[in-house]
Image 1: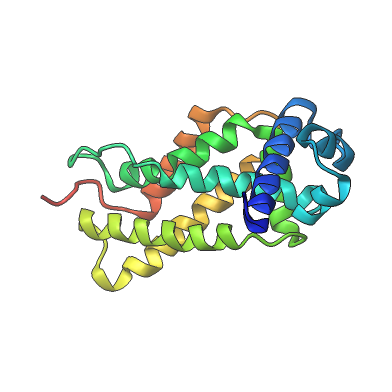
Image 2 (image 1 turned 60 degrees about the horizontal axis):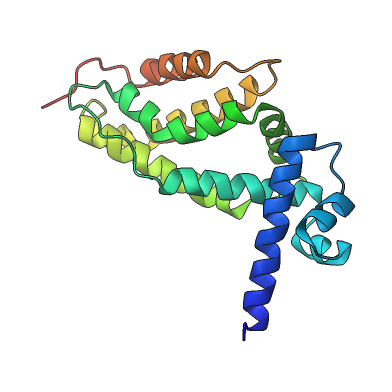
Length: 195
């Protein structure tokens, strides 16, 4: 027999799955808490225990971002530029942002407004900054005492680019990647990797 905690987790997963499906199918604004309750087979109160619509969208995106972060990065060619290697680190997140454009805009607006906090967003930011720092160190193009600051600069340039691109009517993934690559290359000024 499942424990109370297991039942609560199962309900929460059903709510998030239903919310994700409805947000993509109908759009964020057109989806109601009642719709989510009906689709997940639980009461409105059970949905609200998981959060309001903003909280549900943040949880859906956090889960997708976490899944993208958990996937192993593509193998990098040692001859790749530092900017190219960093671009590979953020690729899953950029793809998610481009694939779910309307929801990405709403997610970005919620994050910027401060209406809904995302502990996972903060944790993954720290992990991504560490991965960028590791890439900079491995590449050898940034002085050791500048790695942490450069990694933070790259990360905030990445977030700023994503959030500013979310304001565009249409996000073309290849153009977004080109923009990020140009931004990363201007911060990571070396052109040749060290061997």
